Structures are given as structure tokens and as C-alpha cells.
Length: 380
Length: 109
Image (cartoon, rainbow over all chains, first blue to last red; front, side, top):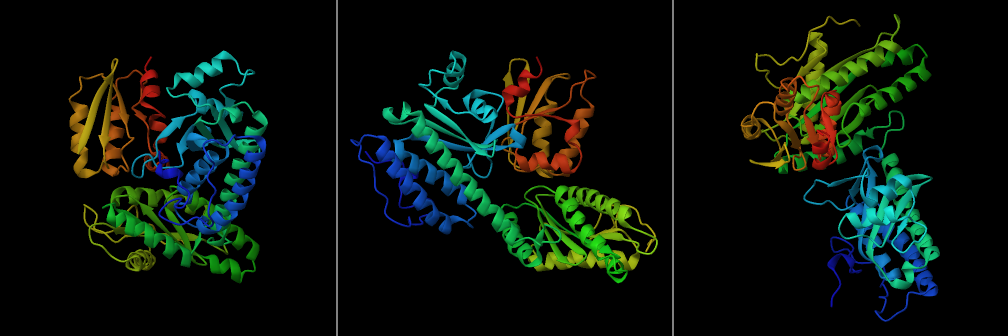
């Protein structure tokens, strides 16, 4: 009988070949400690090669899920393996593999054996006599009860859960082997997270913590293409801070650096996790806000601008006044290139500066004109 | 646009399938407004990739029209993309969010 597609080693996802041939466990082979340890060593060795191939790929978590499933099958003949990451501040679990299309189904951590493992950060084993009947009942209440379920930890914090439906009997009764396996999966999971962080840090402007201009264009290009393909609207927001140069001229370099860092954090905190934010020059930030129509984009841009204005008011002095202006461009029914959208948002911001208006958009408002919000005389 | 409507005990669960924007909103409105006044309502956003400004406005209006029982509109299975729209517009406090339909239904008890 052939194994499920996801467990086949040569193509972990998308047809990419494995770095080296993988030895298949023979069905008759006993899962003894020695055999399992040999497979574990193989898993560790293979992972580094795998990481080099998949570390920067957008589908790396899906491939990682397959990697774990395949390797657990090899090591302890695990079947029905599912990997979840902890999301929503520990309130839910999300499968590493999208359930349907782009949307991930969430499993609440308040219920079920997965939730028990995630919230208590301790493993579940069907044959563990130290667990009370209530825990076993919990495992059986959700339909197909897992035979083993373990948390993935970062320090003492659960960041994921792996559930195994079935595995070799010898492995089930060997808690030490399972503890080593769970620890190894955790190690690899954290290694992939570290790679992801490193990758993000390489693309990030060190002063503000948002994307550099070059990386903004790279990421935004893909996001915009995706939006066009799915007929989703998007809004480009330019935030131009005036007066930063004065801080430099006054020798307030430390304050300037702190301000840029605060601005980056503030902007990042006021947009959604899949919006794209970049720093274009010393005092100009650009955000691509996905799946927003003009009205909602304008509302969010106004809130973003108010946040930045509040921050600038704290740092502003009589001799070094600071001010923000906002330019908006909508990516709607008329397809434009990324650079055209960014240029349109910059032109709107520049138009605001010339007209001494805080926020200008490049589309017509229902009542006529292209302004959002109140006009204010330029305080600078 | 497909909008499913199911009944869980005394609670009506409305589940739109697809983005809720200007054109599709009428289907959601139609499905909700057929309900008798005072119905216990849960909106599952599981299959909604995004909401536009009119959809948000509609849900805010609907929330304000809820009977004066201190109840708020309950959303279930809200994808992150939708949830974050409520957060960045400072509207998340106006509604109740539940991880599952079952949790949302149970909250009426």
C-alpha cells in the first residue's frame, strides 16, 4: 500500500527534491531505542540541508509540517500527525497547513486535548498511567483521540502543539524516547523561527524596524499582484514627517534616532500584521494597506496620522517643530504599477504640503474634492 | 454571494461565504433582516477574507440596534485579517468575538 502523498520524502512540497536519499523504515523493523536514535540523528543532519533550501521560502511552514510528519513516521512510525502553532495570545491553535484556501481554521485552547497540552505545556500520552481519567476522557471526547500529543516550547512558553494519531507500540510505551523526540522537534521548530527572525532582520531598516525601501518594493510587489489577482482593493499611505532635519541641524542626533525608532514602532503597531510598511528616506514612511476600500483606508490612515502626530507633539519644541502630512493613493479598479501607486501617494503628500493640508488622497470624495479630514494651517 | 443560515437551539448563525463589500453586503443584510426582532444572532466570519467600510458600518449599526439587554453582536471564527480591521479601527471593543460558533452560542446561556 502506498503512503500518503504528504509523507513521501523526495518532494516535501512543490516538487523540490530532498537533499539526499532518505532511508525508509521497513514495516517489520522494530522501533527500538537504537533504531529511533539513529533516525533522530538522521533527522537532525537532514534538517540543516532542508533549512538551506527552504529557509527563505514563503511556504516553509507548510514544508516544515511535512518534514515533521515524514520524520516522525520514519522514527516511530507516526501517522495522522498534525502540527499547530499557538496564536491569538495563546487563545487558539492554527494548523501549519492552511485548511482551505488562505483561511486557517482555529482551534480554541480552552477545550480539547490539544488545548490541554498547549495551556499546560505538558505532553499527553494515551498509555500514561500518571494522567487521570479526566484527561483521557478529554482526549477521547474529540473523536479520533491522539495517542501522543506534545507541546513545542520556546523557553517555557508554548508556541506549538504536535498531535500524533497512531504510532508503533514500542514507542508509545517509551516516555524517554518520546521526550527526546519532542525536544528535537522543538529544537528544529525554534531553529526555523530563528531563521525567520534573522531573515526579517536582514530586510529591516535598523533605525525604524520597518522594511528598507528596497525590500518594501520587493514585498509590496508580490502583495499588490496578489491583491489584483483576487480583486482586492488596497491603499498606499505616505507619512512625511517635517522637521527631522532641524533635529539634525540642532545637534539633537540621539533624539532624532529615538524619534525614528518610535515612529517605526508606532506605525507598525497601528496597521495589521500583513500590511507592508517601509522607510523610504530619513523622514518618509510608506504603508501598503491590504484589502481596504477607500473609505476604510482613509479612516485607518487618519488614525495612523493622529498616532504619529501625537508622538511628534511629545518630541516637538519651539525651535524644532515637527509635523506629519499624509498622502493616500488607492489601488482599485484601474491597475497601476507599484511605483505609480507610491508616486501618486507621494504626490498627494506633497500637494498637502503646498496647500498646507494634513491629509490628501488621490481619489475623489463623494462630496467632491480629494481631501479627507479638516484643513489646518501649517504650524511649522 | 452565498450566506448560510443555521439554527443552534434558539440562536441563529449567519455565515457569509466570501468578502463582504459593497455589492455583497445586501445578501448579508437580507439574511439578517429576515430574522424576527430580538433574535439571538451569531455571525460566523470563518469564510470571509475581508470586510469593507460599508460592512463595518452595517455591523456597527446593527450592534447599536440590538435590544437593550446589554448584549452585543457576536462574531465567531473571525479570521485574523478581519479581526485586525476591527482592531485598527478601534471597533473591536464594540463586539464580542468567539473562537468557535459553539462558544458564541454558549455565551447566550
